Image 1 (tube, helix red, strand yellow):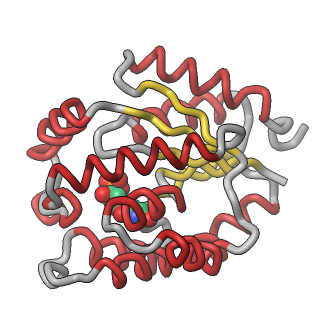
Image 2 (image 1 turned 90 degrees about the horizontal axis):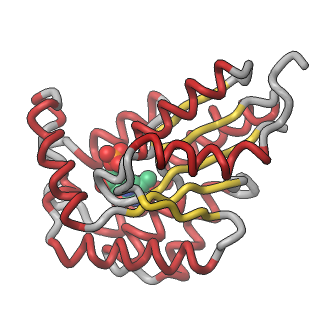
Length: 218
Ligand code: TMP
């Protein structure tokens, strides 16, 4: 079996940079690596991602529809990509997974947590991360990093429905993440994402190295 590692955190916490650095290191060591993102990661999931984030038709989306679309994308990703990849021993790195749903739809949108968990359970079944890296950043850093990235994005994805939410929403999300991390300390490792990139990268490596399977072909 392979290894399933997920990355979590609020906007601008540095997940994508760290996933890229980790993947490069793993590939150099001879591992087979799959990089995924949620929502998305499959052709169906990428269409759902567009609907959730950028489509001009999404302004009236309800929190319930958002929850179900996130998990439709996830159900597809789990069966089309994650399970087959793990079955052949790949290391799967996912930019977000179900903790995002608990944090954003559960705590952020304030949907009933029991129902959110039931939907997630239906979408993922037995497929759970072996390890989750949760990168923390303050709301100020998150906002600054997001604003500096914005003008560099292609025009068609510059509008993002999630980023139109108010400050209170993001505070609830951050609070939710802290509670989720505290409830599963063995799986979720909290790392300060405001530190220099190399320091974060090293902390992540220290958590992952002991769990690595032998490289493919050994
Ligand atoms: P990102 O790929 O730029 O992080 O954008 C994904 C957005 O979707 C981000 O605002 C977090 C949000 N999200 C949820 O609200 N629930 C989820 O389950 C997932 C995977 C993402």
